[in-house]
Length: 140
Image 1 (cartoon, rainbow, N blue to C red):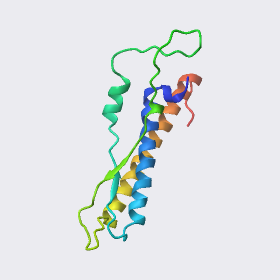
Image 2: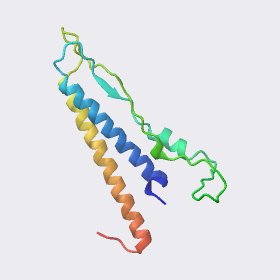
Image 3: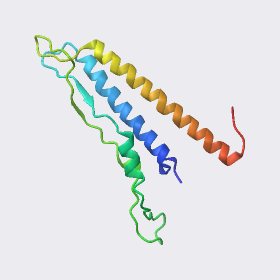
Image 4: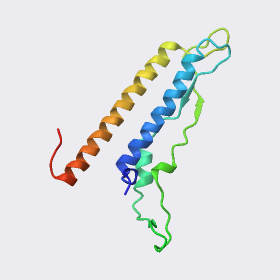
């Protein structure tokens, strides 16, 4: 059993992929802050609630892990994660048509960093809980 098969770890992994994609888009915005006509981009917000609903639909699905098993559909969180950037102009547009405001981009970068730290902390705590469940003792 892979860690991504556990819904919590799959969703955290998906969140970290979203944060990574957003960091890339935000860095492109900062790099093009003075490019004439450049429109600021952002990645659509990862909705944790929708991801949770999609993994816990209330129905059990069979998944075949060996050739002799009955066929089933294995839906994994790892198959998702196609994050696309979309136009998200900041509050101002300069005379040359550029819509990147560096202060707003830096606030988004800081928010993105906090999201990443939260996800990695939750991932680490989840691994610690699994370790404790397997070994019967906490590793502090």
